[in-house]
Amino acid sequence: MNEPITIDVPAGRATTVAVLNSLSQPISAAARFRLPSASAPHHMDFDIGKLSGPGPGTDLFEGPGPSLFLFTAFDTANGAKITTWREALTPTLADCAAVSPDRWGTEPRWWPPGKTYCLQTSEGGFVLLSFSSESNALGQNTGRIVDYALWRTSPAT
Image (cartoon, rainbow, N blue to C red; front, side, top):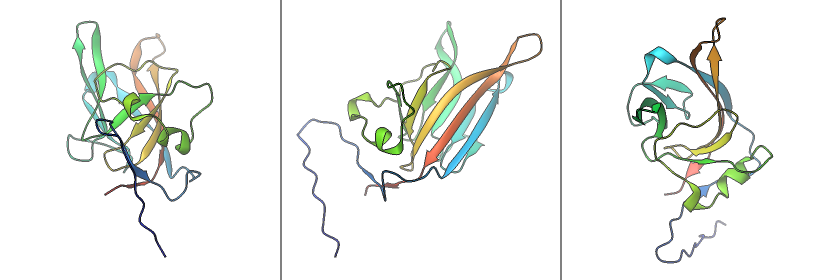
């Protein structure tokens, strides 16, 4: 028999609840988005694994940056949230799900290559992200690469 679960949250504390079948779930999708420099903006929907136009499924998009020095930036959309992974080891689903709510953000920024990020999608999934760049034979930057792995979860209702 399924017993109801009660979660007590102190007043004024931001809280995110993810309902998981198991914290050791295997990755359900892993892929790479190639984002050519000359064709921004790019809208990414990690739940379906596609570049798309702006819309309700977009989790992250690359577009004009907020300043002259930040030419392009990534921004979350539709309630998706992102955080920089600060530990040495690659995070698991359990690690991403346990990140404190105050560490998740939505503000636009440029995320440097070589770091790892956890993203909570607009549909309740968790994504492991990393960013890198591509260059041509002359060493000119020709675009960015977004590598990701998705764990499917069920959003709380």
